[in-house]
Length: 219
Image (cartoon, rainbow, N blue to C red; front, side):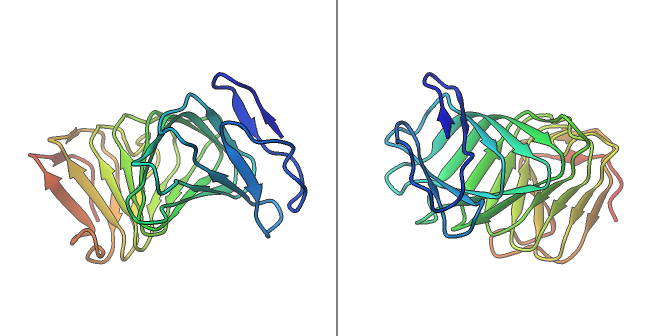
């Protein structure tokens, strides 16, 4: 286990069930499932830490916090990061996100997760699952497909938020893609929609607020 002070990378590399060497800014506990890590938030909502997801992991945002802002998130290829809000009120935001290949963001407890400046080191598909609200407020450069699964809502407020035009966006039945804030989405992103939305969004593709324009083909 490594954690350097002053916003260094956090990295866990020991088997589930082993004792934690120490705790400092962030408490990292292995769960009963080998290779799955639970990161509990700390007593402050804003930290300069970078988080690297080496295996399937869970971030639980503490109930005493209105939200947590962290620096860079890096997700290894084929891994899933689950964000859990214990009382349906928590938010989590990363200043930058780096995908080292195909990545999945899952959610329970209806958290609001903001991912800014998403890039890739290798071609990456991005999948959103669970019952949370994922916000994409910046232009992003990942090249793979974006999948929005049943129960999840993704909010877009910037052109190219869904990545490079080479990848399409697929809204599965029960998922929702929302445009808001007067975004002019001029990139010709192909979007396929299914279903009629979910419990928090009443359409598979919705203009939530402001005058929004989407130029890509919709099927």
